[in-house]
Image (cartoon, rainbow over all chains, first blue to last red; front, side):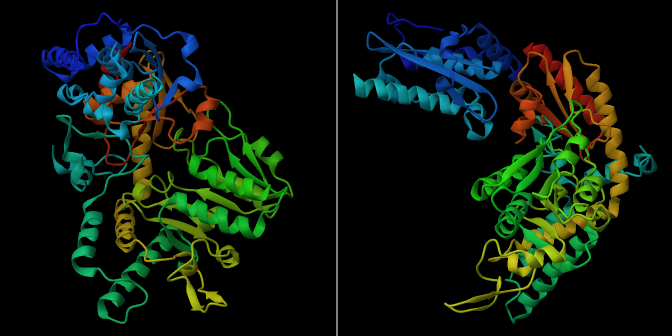
Length: 147
Length: 415
């Protein structure tokens, strides 16, 4: 999922949009089916980026993250070998990609709690998502310091 | 259902047993809990919970050194717990039972102390391809420190040790063999008696990792002739943070201390310290006293049910689960040894174990997913991880059927 610099929504607005999408679901099944669909629809990351230095190691599922700076905004591409993790990765990319390093560093990402998926952010889940968010912010910091 | 009908043909009264484990009646994600993560840790029956409660309410004092009544009472209780473990393993002497924090510490203790005295550059240590990281890393580190060589007994595709290869590895340079009794990932029951006999023929001692065996079967260390046998309390329905190292007296007496400090000494001066006899020499600091007492309660509990009954009942669960799993297209069971405990690992074609575990969790079913701390074993089977269901005697065939339904549902969602 790649968002260009023409994107109008702020990080908070995208978070609100996702929260509203999830509010439509009556039960966990629908929520996870949606996440699985998101995971399946996330464009496959270019194999050149699926290298060991792009890998964020969780205990179980692996996440690959690549970031580039385009017109002062960061574009993320990412992938995971587990489909539910990939769905969560797709949400993170949708929220953060196409924003300035400063905006990304300040993002609170409260939507994860609002949509009832905080368990995926607990370190015990070991799915690499928490480390992925950390890495997204570290990349933003690196671009900011460089820029 | 009448009371008589709750007793299974293996002699297990499942309703009575389940009532002993309060946690089994809780809900997870709105569903009744189905707990199949027993290989990681087992649940605790009321006698264990009550023993811990009683300890902190009525018995708490430090052991071995106090002259006051409570200290003496709890010292007796703690040493009785040691005797309970001794009897349970059929060790010759209570002093052959060392309290540790768990299997991992027990193995580290032997690797450190045995290694310090008996392993030198060029020597060899034998482990197997199915070991838990806790029975690889202490030996690997020892070998790195000493310039010794770690040798690995390979397995066949069923997940059984290739005994011919093991025999070839034994040689005069071999200083110790470290092997698991039951594989935590595959469920394979290893022929440890034969492994020990072969090593002893060349005067090589053997350490057995019993973390997964002690909850499922009766273990007799004298009959096995094991030199060291390790297990954890928490997998045997006891508290976390307490474990056992059994060591033959002749070996323990030879080994230098591991951790040192209070409780391990006879006399101390700045010039020289004389260490206490075994097992106290290996029990530095205030131990997990409540844990020791709780572990004894757990052992009494399983013995009241009978480990033979437990083993027979769990075999039925294993057979039922294996039959049901084999019916699901795309499921591949990892580990098909002839002699297997109630642990079943599998992968589903095209679906990540993490995803399966996540959906099963939503259904209230606790399984383990991942590499189970056996990455070399995962590499052997060319998988990133598996789903593992490990059954205890409080699990039921009905739970397995629910699990199978849940698994089919998860596969439909994820494929």
